[in-house]
Length: 168
Image (cartoon, rainbow, N blue to C red):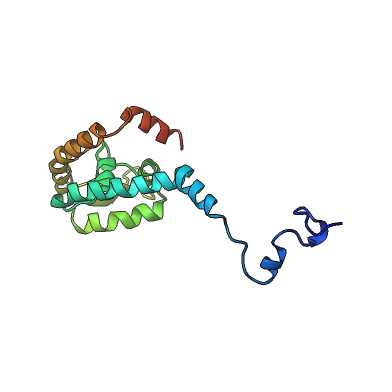
């Protein structure tokens, strides 16, 4: 059997085997780099997320918030203080990451963690009066920034939102 077969049985050498055996990986063609640059949805979503984060961080900075903290405070703005699980799910993070994200908001007096009256094992996340006031002050700036962002999009923002929701 020829060693040039890429499906060689029993570990027989295929193309590039000498390079792999010498510890030098077979190079990825530059065309592949261009393909990933142009087609990778993950790359494009990551880049867009970083750009959006910077944009909203800058807009929310006067309120002492970043975009993640604004989203977290908004997730707590409910008729009843929610437990950790539903908030983590809404924000697409695990409970440990959410707990870490809550710490600076707790230190700033914007959020409290309380014990559920019906189930003492459950922790409820409480948006304090200071948190409500900070959120209320930031919302008009968020709205204005969001309107400007949507106005600059080359497609219907609802189509973009629907496409992103489909990735769940």
